[in-house]
View 1: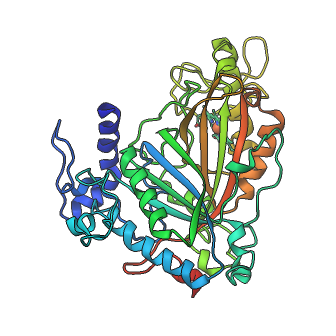
View 2: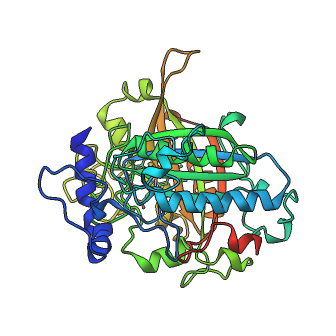
View 3: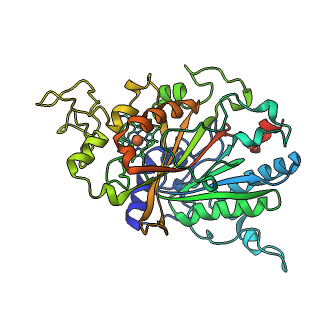
Amino acid sequence: MAGPRRRDLIAGLGVVGAGALAAGGVALAGGERPTRTARSDRVPFDGPHQAGIVTPAQDQLVFAAIDVTTTDASALADVLSRWTTAVRSMVEGVPVGGGEGGLAGAVGQPPADTGEAYELPAANLTVTLGYGPSLFDGRFGLQDKRPAVLEELPALPGEQLDPSRCGGDLALQACADDPQVAFHAVRNLLRIGRGVVALRWMQLGFGRTSSTAEAQTTPRNLMGFKDGTANLRAEDSASLGRWVFVGGAGAPEPDQEWMRGGSYLVARRIRMLVESWDRASLGEQERVVGRTKVSGAPLSAPHGSEFAALDLAATDAAGKPAIDLAAHVRLAAPETNGGQRLLRRGYSYTDGMDPVTGQLDAGLFFLAYANDPDGFVRIQRRLGAHDGLTEYLKHTGSAVFAVPPGTAPGEDWGASLFA
Ligand SMILES: C=CC1=C(C)c2cc3[nH]c(cc4nc(cc5[nH]c(cc1n2)c(C)c5CCC(=O)O)C(CCC(=O)O)=C4C)c(C)c3C=C
Ligand SMILES: [Fe+2]
């Protein structure tokens, strides 16, 4: 565990650490374990966009879809305010309630913080909040605030969704370099919200399956392929403005001003039929993806770089398309989708064994940000209908959320929505 975790911390320094160091932090020396006092493992909470979108993808995920169990809008706004205070504390590596006082609490009372992250580093924790379409159904007087593009996703080809892994009024995406830090964050927020919100479903992810910053190396997904090669990166502000952030440069104007600077998050739990995949030949696996397994180079330039551009017109010696017509990358690429791009931020998951079949329940918890969820829908319609990878996949969970913009210092989550 220490190896990969440490590598990501160091990779993260390239982007996150620069700001943190400028703010008076200390750099990590070789072999040194990060501590709560090292500022280089902290991601600032406030900013024009929420942390956890273009933040260099951490290696651990705890994702919670949450329902609101009251119709009292002020109680919900109060929870969002208390969540903001708690997250501001936790991303600094400080317990909920502040310092050791948060752990101690009053005699005869439970401590303000559950304690399991105490003395752990801040681990680049980010907590990202989303609002599901159902939040705008009239229970809280928010029906006029619903962005037109925020609707439940339509039925998509080939999906076999489990209703107990779908939807949610709210989402909390907690990412960190340490799984206990991410779990601690969600656990404490649920605890704060008790009586107002309830957990609907939850997904743990281990191992990022995308790179969201130039400094990060491309990870491998559970099919053994490099994943994230052609993803959008934090440094590509022109593409982020056009495709990811609401009201960004080149993007359509939002119908709801409170969403300016926000984004939309699509979550899909995609089980991989790994036992079938592991029986497929290397040639079949590469044909289905459209890239080589070892280097990640496109099959149009199999001896080239991982980052070589796809040449969708290239043919092999037999005159057939070098990148198969049903290859995943051909069908997902912007070149075949009207230029559409997504910021992918998914994680590998396993939930152990499928008790019915005895097979592994493992795959990709696909997370993608876009300034219109329809961008995902249009790509997925093509993938579901034609993608060779589909034979090895089963979409079992689904949700979509509006992710509001980031906060100014002192501002609470929900302030612009409930204003
Ligand atoms: C609707 C969007 C997408 C879903 C769902 C999806 C699922 C999925 N993808 C992989 C593995 C790979 N995907 C790769 C590239 C890629 N995938 C999407 C979109 C979805 N993938 C896009 C937009 C792209 C980029 C295409 C391009 O511009 O070239 C790759 C190649 C490496 C990379 O660029 O990331 C792999 C490998 C799996 C296993 C999967 C479902 C489980
Ligand atoms: Fe993909």
